[in-house]
Image (cartoon, rainbow, N blue to C red; front, side):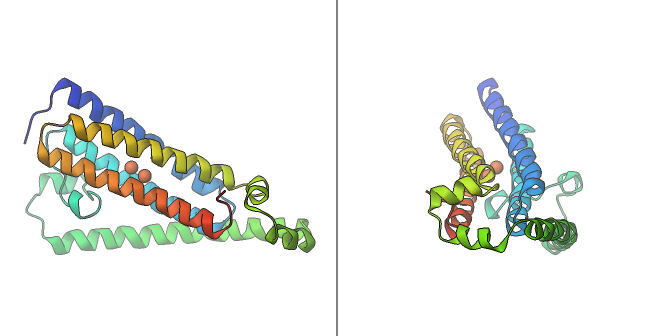
Length: 204
Ligand SMILES: [Fe+2]
Ligand SMILES: [Fe+2]
């Protein structure tokens, strides 16, 4: 348990708002994305932003989130009250959550595939071939997922710099560590988006 200054609290509250926006964007964009692979990527990232949200929320309550240093604070109400829960139980919980999410995304993928099939029936195969030979900028113009990706890359860049600022303002070293860890993960998110764009020839 630690206390936060007013300034520290307001910085953490702003981070909370940023994380909320990230969750909203990734969730919406997962539905909008044409490529099922991108839907999957956005869904995964939405989940990770939710973990960030929970970690920052825990900090605001004057506590250090459990497991935040090992890759996202998987913390819910039951874990907060029962600190004695074994690691095994925690793993089981996250596994269960994982398979639920898989089922959800599976359903979503099926929908996406149906959409894609009908879109392909409407468009000619000729135009598909043409697209393969186009430059990145032409690809960007033609790919409806492009603007979603650009937006999220900018969003990650922005939130990462915000965490950087927040780290400098925190007096408690444990709090700083949690925020540094989250910042690293934001950079990883940016990298995952960049890798996808690069793979699809969408990065200019
Ligand atoms: Fe985040
Ligand atoms: Fe992120």
